[in-house]
Image 1: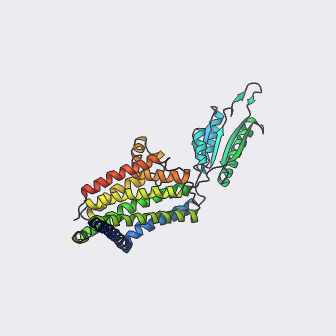
Image 2: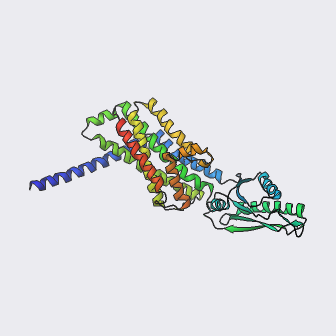
Length: 380
Protein backbone atom coordinates (compact mmCIF):
# COMPACT_ATOMS: atom_id res chain seq x y z
CA UNK A 1 0.00 0.00 0.00
CA UNK A 2 2.83 2.36 0.88
CA UNK A 3 4.53 1.55 -2.42
CA UNK A 4 1.31 2.31 -4.31
CA UNK A 5 0.95 5.67 -2.56
CA UNK A 6 4.60 6.46 -3.36
CA UNK A 7 4.08 5.57 -7.01
CA UNK A 8 0.97 7.75 -7.21
CA UNK A 9 2.91 10.57 -5.60
CA UNK A 10 5.69 10.24 -8.16
CA UNK A 11 3.13 10.26 -10.96
CA UNK A 12 1.53 13.36 -9.53
CA UNK A 13 4.93 14.99 -9.25
CA UNK A 14 5.66 14.18 -12.89
CA UNK A 15 2.32 15.64 -14.00
CA UNK A 16 2.99 18.73 -11.89
CA UNK A 17 6.40 19.20 -13.53
CA UNK A 18 4.96 18.78 -17.01
CA UNK A 19 2.17 21.24 -16.20
CA UNK A 20 4.70 23.73 -14.84
CA UNK A 21 6.86 23.38 -17.96
CA UNK A 22 3.81 23.86 -20.21
CA UNK A 23 2.67 26.94 -18.30
CA UNK A 24 6.17 28.45 -18.28
CA UNK A 25 6.63 27.80 -22.00
CA UNK A 26 3.29 29.49 -22.77
CA UNK A 27 4.24 32.44 -20.58
CA UNK A 28 7.67 32.60 -22.21
CA UNK A 29 6.05 32.65 -25.66
CA UNK A 30 3.87 35.61 -24.64
CA UNK A 31 6.90 37.43 -23.21
CA UNK A 32 8.81 36.88 -26.45
CA UNK A 33 6.13 38.30 -28.74
CA UNK A 34 5.57 41.29 -26.49
CA UNK A 35 9.07 42.44 -27.38
CA UNK A 36 8.17 44.05 -30.72
CA UNK A 37 11.72 45.17 -31.51
CA UNK A 38 13.15 41.71 -30.94
CA UNK A 39 10.44 40.08 -33.05
CA UNK A 40 11.07 42.54 -35.87
CA UNK A 41 14.81 41.96 -36.05
CA UNK A 42 14.72 38.19 -35.60
CA UNK A 43 11.69 37.39 -37.76
CA UNK A 44 11.09 40.11 -40.33
CA UNK A 45 14.66 41.10 -41.28
CA UNK A 46 15.33 37.64 -42.84
CA UNK A 47 11.96 37.90 -44.65
CA UNK A 48 12.96 41.29 -46.05
CA UNK A 49 16.30 39.85 -47.21
CA UNK A 50 14.50 37.01 -49.01
CA UNK A 51 12.30 39.52 -50.86
CA UNK A 52 15.14 41.89 -51.76
CA UNK A 53 17.54 39.24 -53.04
CA UNK A 54 14.75 37.14 -54.54
CA UNK A 55 13.57 39.97 -56.79
CA UNK A 56 17.18 40.93 -57.49
CA UNK A 57 18.06 37.41 -58.66
CA UNK A 58 15.02 37.40 -60.94
CA UNK A 59 16.39 40.35 -62.91
CA UNK A 60 18.43 39.88 -66.07
CA UNK A 61 21.32 42.13 -65.07
CA UNK A 62 23.61 39.32 -63.94
CA UNK A 63 26.39 37.98 -66.11
CA UNK A 64 26.24 34.59 -67.78
CA UNK A 65 28.45 32.11 -65.94
CA UNK A 66 30.54 30.07 -68.37
CA UNK A 67 32.83 27.19 -67.41
CA UNK A 68 35.46 26.42 -70.04
CA UNK A 69 37.89 23.56 -70.58
CA UNK A 70 40.66 24.09 -73.14
CA UNK A 71 42.51 21.05 -74.48
CA UNK A 72 44.26 22.99 -77.23
CA UNK A 73 47.69 24.58 -76.86
CA UNK A 74 47.55 26.66 -80.03
CA UNK A 75 47.70 30.42 -80.27
CA UNK A 76 44.30 30.47 -81.98
CA UNK A 77 42.65 28.77 -78.99
CA UNK A 78 44.16 31.40 -76.67
CA UNK A 79 42.79 34.16 -78.88
CA UNK A 80 39.37 32.46 -78.92
CA UNK A 81 39.26 32.24 -75.13
CA UNK A 82 40.33 35.86 -74.81
CA UNK A 83 37.52 36.82 -77.19
CA UNK A 84 35.05 35.08 -74.90
CA UNK A 85 36.45 36.87 -71.85
CA UNK A 86 36.16 40.21 -73.66
CA UNK A 87 32.38 39.80 -73.89
CA UNK A 88 31.03 41.94 -71.01
CA UNK A 89 28.03 39.68 -70.46
CA UNK A 90 30.28 36.62 -69.92
CA UNK A 91 31.96 35.54 -66.71
CA UNK A 92 34.37 32.88 -67.98
CA UNK A 93 36.08 30.45 -65.62
CA UNK A 94 38.62 27.92 -66.88
CA UNK A 95 38.29 24.60 -65.03
CA UNK A 96 38.71 20.88 -65.61
CA UNK A 97 35.97 19.18 -67.63
CA UNK A 98 34.68 17.13 -64.69
CA UNK A 99 34.42 20.22 -62.50
CA UNK A 100 32.72 22.15 -65.28
CA UNK A 101 30.14 19.39 -65.73
CA UNK A 102 29.51 19.35 -61.98
CA UNK A 103 29.00 23.12 -61.85
CA UNK A 104 26.57 22.97 -64.78
CA UNK A 105 24.70 20.08 -63.16
CA UNK A 106 24.32 21.99 -59.89
CA UNK A 107 23.12 25.13 -61.64
CA UNK A 108 26.28 27.07 -60.79
CA UNK A 109 26.98 27.71 -64.50
CA UNK A 110 24.82 28.56 -67.51
CA UNK A 111 27.03 27.17 -70.27
CA UNK A 112 29.87 24.65 -70.49
CA UNK A 113 32.41 25.00 -73.31
CA UNK A 114 34.98 22.37 -74.33
CA UNK A 115 37.72 23.43 -76.78
CA UNK A 116 39.18 20.31 -78.49
CA UNK A 117 42.91 19.72 -78.84
CA UNK A 118 42.64 20.11 -82.64
CA UNK A 119 41.32 23.67 -82.41
CA UNK A 120 43.73 25.87 -84.37
CA UNK A 121 46.13 22.97 -85.06
CA UNK A 122 47.58 22.95 -88.61
CA UNK A 123 47.17 19.94 -90.91
CA UNK A 124 50.48 19.26 -92.74
CA UNK A 125 48.70 17.34 -95.49
CA UNK A 126 46.35 20.17 -96.53
CA UNK A 127 48.37 23.18 -95.36
CA UNK A 128 45.24 24.31 -93.55
CA UNK A 129 43.76 23.90 -90.09
CA UNK A 130 42.41 20.60 -88.89
CA UNK A 131 38.61 20.43 -88.56
CA UNK A 132 37.58 21.16 -84.98
CA UNK A 133 34.21 21.44 -83.26
CA UNK A 134 33.79 23.39 -80.02
CA UNK A 135 31.38 21.45 -77.81
CA UNK A 136 28.93 23.38 -75.65
CA UNK A 137 26.38 22.19 -73.09
CA UNK A 138 23.53 24.26 -71.68
CA UNK A 139 20.95 23.71 -68.96
CA UNK A 140 18.02 21.96 -70.63
CA UNK A 141 15.64 22.95 -67.84
CA UNK A 142 16.46 26.69 -68.16
CA UNK A 143 17.73 27.08 -71.72
CA UNK A 144 17.30 30.85 -72.22
CA UNK A 145 20.62 32.04 -70.75
CA UNK A 146 22.63 29.09 -72.08
CA UNK A 147 21.26 29.16 -75.61
CA UNK A 148 21.59 32.93 -75.89
CA UNK A 149 25.22 32.69 -74.80
CA UNK A 150 25.72 29.77 -77.18
CA UNK A 151 24.66 31.97 -80.11
CA UNK A 152 27.36 34.49 -79.18
CA UNK A 153 29.95 31.70 -78.95
CA UNK A 154 28.88 30.45 -82.40
CA UNK A 155 29.26 33.94 -83.84
CA UNK A 156 32.78 34.24 -82.39
CA UNK A 157 33.78 30.84 -83.80
CA UNK A 158 32.25 31.75 -87.15
CA UNK A 159 34.27 34.98 -87.20
CA UNK A 160 37.52 33.07 -86.60
CA UNK A 161 36.50 30.54 -89.21
CA UNK A 162 35.98 33.21 -91.87
CA UNK A 163 38.98 35.31 -90.86
CA UNK A 164 41.56 32.55 -90.46
CA UNK A 165 40.48 29.63 -92.60
CA UNK A 166 38.25 31.28 -95.25
CA UNK A 167 36.16 28.12 -95.05
CA UNK A 168 32.71 27.60 -93.52
CA UNK A 169 33.33 24.04 -92.29
CA UNK A 170 36.74 23.89 -90.56
CA UNK A 171 35.74 25.46 -87.21
CA UNK A 172 32.25 24.80 -85.84
CA UNK A 173 30.16 24.60 -82.68
CA UNK A 174 28.18 21.58 -81.50
CA UNK A 175 25.61 22.34 -78.81
CA UNK A 176 23.66 19.97 -76.58
CA UNK A 177 21.21 20.42 -73.75
CA UNK A 178 21.77 18.49 -70.54
CA UNK A 179 19.38 17.63 -67.71
CA UNK A 180 20.39 19.41 -64.50
CA UNK A 181 18.90 20.18 -61.12
CA UNK A 182 17.76 23.45 -62.71
CA UNK A 183 18.95 25.47 -59.73
CA UNK A 184 18.97 29.24 -59.61
CA UNK A 185 20.83 31.76 -57.47
CA UNK A 186 17.92 31.94 -55.00
CA UNK A 187 18.36 28.19 -54.37
CA UNK A 188 21.87 28.78 -53.02
CA UNK A 189 20.97 31.99 -51.21
CA UNK A 190 17.89 30.69 -49.35
CA UNK A 191 19.65 28.11 -47.09
CA UNK A 192 22.25 30.75 -46.18
CA UNK A 193 19.62 33.26 -45.06
CA UNK A 194 17.81 30.56 -43.08
CA UNK A 195 21.06 29.64 -41.30
CA UNK A 196 21.72 33.33 -40.61
CA UNK A 197 18.25 33.79 -39.10
CA UNK A 198 18.78 30.73 -36.88
CA UNK A 199 22.06 32.19 -35.61
CA UNK A 200 20.60 35.63 -34.94
CA UNK A 201 17.53 34.27 -33.17
CA UNK A 202 19.66 32.00 -30.99
CA UNK A 203 22.18 34.65 -30.02
CA UNK A 204 20.24 37.91 -29.82
CA UNK A 205 16.78 36.73 -28.78
CA UNK A 206 18.26 34.85 -25.81
CA UNK A 207 21.17 37.05 -24.81
CA UNK A 208 19.36 40.38 -24.68
CA UNK A 209 16.16 38.96 -23.20
CA UNK A 210 18.03 37.37 -20.31
CA UNK A 211 20.19 40.43 -19.75
CA UNK A 212 16.97 42.45 -19.49
CA UNK A 213 15.65 39.92 -16.96
CA UNK A 214 18.84 40.41 -14.94
CA UNK A 215 18.82 44.20 -14.95
CA UNK A 216 15.14 44.37 -14.00
CA UNK A 217 15.57 41.81 -11.21
CA UNK A 218 13.11 39.31 -12.74
CA UNK A 219 15.57 36.43 -12.50
CA UNK A 220 16.09 37.17 -8.80
CA UNK A 221 12.35 37.09 -8.21
CA UNK A 222 12.02 33.81 -10.10
CA UNK A 223 14.59 32.27 -7.78
CA UNK A 224 12.38 33.27 -4.83
CA UNK A 225 9.33 31.41 -6.22
CA UNK A 226 8.65 27.67 -5.73
CA UNK A 227 9.35 27.18 -9.47
CA UNK A 228 12.75 25.69 -10.12
CA UNK A 229 14.98 28.06 -12.13
CA UNK A 230 15.94 25.23 -14.48
CA UNK A 231 12.30 24.91 -15.56
CA UNK A 232 12.30 28.57 -16.49
CA UNK A 233 15.48 28.18 -18.56
CA UNK A 234 14.14 25.12 -20.37
CA UNK A 235 10.86 26.92 -21.10
CA UNK A 236 12.75 29.89 -22.54
CA UNK A 237 14.86 27.59 -24.71
CA UNK A 238 11.79 25.64 -25.89
CA UNK A 239 10.09 28.88 -26.88
CA UNK A 240 13.07 29.98 -28.98
CA UNK A 241 13.30 26.61 -30.73
CA UNK A 242 9.57 26.69 -31.57
CA UNK A 243 9.89 30.23 -32.93
CA UNK A 244 13.02 29.26 -34.87
CA UNK A 245 11.33 26.26 -36.51
CA UNK A 246 8.34 28.44 -37.42
CA UNK A 247 10.69 31.04 -38.89
CA UNK A 248 12.49 28.41 -41.00
CA UNK A 249 9.14 27.14 -42.29
CA UNK A 250 8.07 30.71 -43.16
CA UNK A 251 11.28 31.49 -45.06
CA UNK A 252 11.08 28.18 -46.93
CA UNK A 253 7.46 28.88 -47.91
CA UNK A 254 8.35 32.35 -49.19
CA UNK A 255 11.30 31.06 -51.17
CA UNK A 256 9.40 28.18 -52.76
CA UNK A 257 6.02 29.79 -53.44
CA UNK A 258 7.08 33.30 -54.44
CA UNK A 259 10.53 32.82 -55.98
CA UNK A 260 10.24 29.18 -57.13
CA UNK A 261 13.20 28.01 -55.06
CA UNK A 262 14.01 24.31 -55.39
CA UNK A 263 14.40 22.05 -52.35
CA UNK A 264 15.76 18.80 -53.77
CA UNK A 265 16.42 16.94 -50.52
CA UNK A 266 14.15 15.83 -47.69
CA UNK A 267 12.25 18.59 -45.90
CA UNK A 268 12.33 16.47 -42.75
CA UNK A 269 16.14 16.27 -42.88
CA UNK A 270 16.32 20.01 -43.58
CA UNK A 271 14.12 20.87 -40.59
CA UNK A 272 15.96 18.41 -38.34
CA UNK A 273 19.33 20.04 -39.10
CA UNK A 274 17.76 23.50 -38.68
CA UNK A 275 16.43 22.48 -35.25
CA UNK A 276 19.86 21.19 -34.24
CA UNK A 277 21.39 24.49 -35.38
CA UNK A 278 18.81 26.39 -33.32
CA UNK A 279 19.73 24.43 -30.21
CA UNK A 280 23.46 25.07 -30.77
CA UNK A 281 23.11 28.83 -31.21
CA UNK A 282 20.78 28.99 -28.21
CA UNK A 283 23.81 27.80 -26.27
CA UNK A 284 25.76 30.83 -27.51
CA UNK A 285 22.92 33.08 -26.37
CA UNK A 286 22.77 31.48 -22.92
CA UNK A 287 26.55 31.75 -22.53
CA UNK A 288 26.51 35.47 -23.36
CA UNK A 289 23.45 36.11 -21.19
CA UNK A 290 24.91 34.19 -18.26
CA UNK A 291 28.20 36.07 -18.36
CA UNK A 292 27.07 39.63 -19.16
CA UNK A 293 25.79 41.89 -16.39
CA UNK A 294 24.05 44.35 -18.72
CA UNK A 295 23.52 45.20 -22.39
CA UNK A 296 26.78 47.15 -22.56
CA UNK A 297 28.65 43.89 -21.99
CA UNK A 298 26.35 41.67 -24.05
CA UNK A 299 26.23 43.76 -27.23
CA UNK A 300 29.94 43.79 -28.21
CA UNK A 301 30.36 40.08 -27.38
CA UNK A 302 27.30 39.13 -29.45
CA UNK A 303 28.51 41.25 -32.37
CA UNK A 304 32.01 39.82 -32.10
CA UNK A 305 30.63 36.30 -32.39
CA UNK A 306 28.06 37.01 -35.09
CA UNK A 307 29.74 39.26 -37.66
CA UNK A 308 32.83 37.15 -38.51
CA UNK A 309 30.62 34.11 -39.10
CA UNK A 310 28.11 36.16 -41.07
CA UNK A 311 30.71 37.13 -43.68
CA UNK A 312 33.06 34.11 -43.54
CA UNK A 313 30.66 31.15 -43.41
CA UNK A 314 29.33 31.32 -46.97
CA UNK A 315 25.97 32.93 -46.18
CA UNK A 316 26.17 35.52 -48.95
CA UNK A 317 29.44 34.75 -50.75
CA UNK A 318 31.15 31.44 -51.62
CA UNK A 319 34.07 30.65 -49.33
CA UNK A 320 36.17 29.37 -52.25
CA UNK A 321 37.31 32.94 -52.93
CA UNK A 322 38.92 33.28 -49.48
CA UNK A 323 42.66 32.77 -48.93
CA UNK A 324 43.46 29.11 -48.30
CA UNK A 325 44.52 29.66 -44.68
CA UNK A 326 41.36 31.64 -43.91
CA UNK A 327 39.13 29.08 -45.63
CA UNK A 328 40.60 26.34 -43.41
CA UNK A 329 39.65 28.38 -40.34
CA UNK A 330 36.12 29.06 -41.61
CA UNK A 331 35.62 25.33 -42.11
CA UNK A 332 35.49 25.01 -38.31
CA UNK A 333 32.89 27.74 -37.62
CA UNK A 334 29.48 26.54 -36.37
CA UNK A 335 27.61 28.65 -38.91
CA UNK A 336 29.70 27.08 -41.69
CA UNK A 337 28.60 23.61 -40.55
CA UNK A 338 24.97 24.74 -40.55
CA UNK A 339 25.10 26.56 -43.91
CA UNK A 340 26.90 23.68 -45.64
CA UNK A 341 24.51 21.06 -44.25
CA UNK A 342 21.34 22.99 -45.16
CA UNK A 343 22.68 23.91 -48.60
CA UNK A 344 23.76 20.33 -49.37
CA UNK A 345 20.33 18.99 -48.43
CA UNK A 346 18.46 21.70 -50.33
CA UNK A 347 20.52 21.90 -53.53
CA UNK A 348 22.15 18.47 -53.82
CA UNK A 349 19.59 16.20 -52.18
CA UNK A 350 22.09 15.08 -49.53
CA UNK A 351 20.89 12.78 -46.74
CA UNK A 352 21.66 13.06 -43.04
CA UNK A 353 24.32 10.41 -43.47
CA UNK A 354 25.99 12.45 -46.22
CA UNK A 355 26.14 15.55 -44.02
CA UNK A 356 27.18 13.62 -40.90
CA UNK A 357 30.45 15.60 -40.76
CA UNK A 358 28.56 18.88 -40.49
CA UNK A 359 26.15 17.39 -37.94
CA UNK A 360 29.07 16.13 -35.86
CA UNK A 361 30.64 19.59 -36.00
CA UNK A 362 27.40 21.17 -34.74
CA UNK A 363 27.11 18.61 -31.94
CA UNK A 364 30.68 19.30 -30.79
CA UNK A 365 30.04 23.04 -30.80
CA UNK A 366 26.81 22.43 -28.88
CA UNK A 367 28.60 20.51 -26.12
CA UNK A 368 31.32 23.19 -25.90
CA UNK A 369 28.99 26.21 -25.68
CA UNK A 370 26.61 24.61 -23.17
CA UNK A 371 29.51 23.66 -20.91
CA UNK A 372 30.71 27.27 -21.12
CA UNK A 373 27.16 28.54 -20.47
CA UNK A 374 26.88 26.43 -17.30
CA UNK A 375 30.28 27.59 -16.05
CA UNK A 376 29.72 31.32 -16.59
CA UNK A 377 25.97 31.61 -15.91
CA UNK A 378 25.05 34.07 -13.15
CA UNK A 379 21.53 34.89 -12.05
CA UNK A 380 22.39 38.47 -11.09
